[in-house]
Length: 471
Image (tube, rainbow, N blue to C red):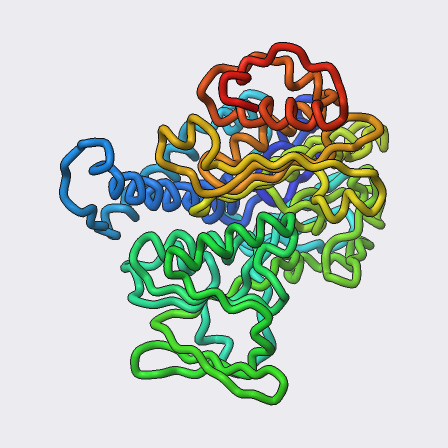
């Protein structure tokens, strides 16, 4: 019998196995498919590779503005897919976590198929593996949510979109959260005629309202057709050229057609095959595994981490949760999970990112001041010819500390990472304003905004490195 069995080898599972073994537990890592899970094989790694290709095409189109004469860029999608496979294989082969796990003596059982609990302390897999353990950590991730509408089998998931063999002439993307807008942005850059559908009143509903508005405007300028508050889907049906989506609102029936329809309307826990009842593990009303502050399930010898819990459903947070779950699985419930600072961003065109509270959420409990800097007023964005977007700080008037940072535009994701550090360090805006960041940089946007906010708050700032930009 092993001490700790970790089910799933995505970011949460890998970190859980590493941490458990590092604490001295005999650890086995069981994964249905390949080491690395969705993040390496179907999620951020291949997606970011495609997004990078889209960025390169966008950059190539402005070379003429800088006196560099080349022809119009042309995408050879098959060669791009070869590059995606190269990147995925290289990431998997050079994973430092894989080497650390092997060094610590973790037994890794890859391609085991689905795992299921035979009883409270035993799992069985499709490959015939039977494993007994004192403690389990469930890290099986999630899958795309299906819609109960006729013809849904004619649609595709985001995973299908990444594995296409050619760029479709046209595409319907249903669902405008992080996944949907990423699919829409990438394939629009590749030349597809994209229609993006969002049932709610705005795309990116979890983002600050100004971010949603800016991304919507940028998408429409790039010829993405954005349908917000479009109604309810009635059915999908096959057409000679692809697929038709039928939908209705207020008694009015409409339809849209394209070569391909991608549905990205949410993420559900991948627990169907686990037979959780045999282990005494309960799920919540959304179908995610219930966990307490220590990542412990309703069965106290079973922990869970990552997307399967429905918490943050992002790679960095999955890694953090895996570490917490394994620590508590080995040592007992001593380390609570911490969601205080969790930056979020996406490599769309334009990029968008946030950390902390949205302006609307902050105003519910704080006296708030905002400072906004448009990207057509910063030196670096002007140099790079990337003047679409803005950065906004949300500041508490009483404590002078940053409650949130929201950005749209070039390098927005990187800006949010720096903002996350300042929030975690509990810095006041006048303290941030005094840091002489290099000029001209995207991160320097934050010190300019901090100086602006500090002056509005009548705080003494003194000299700032970016004062030459006319803050």
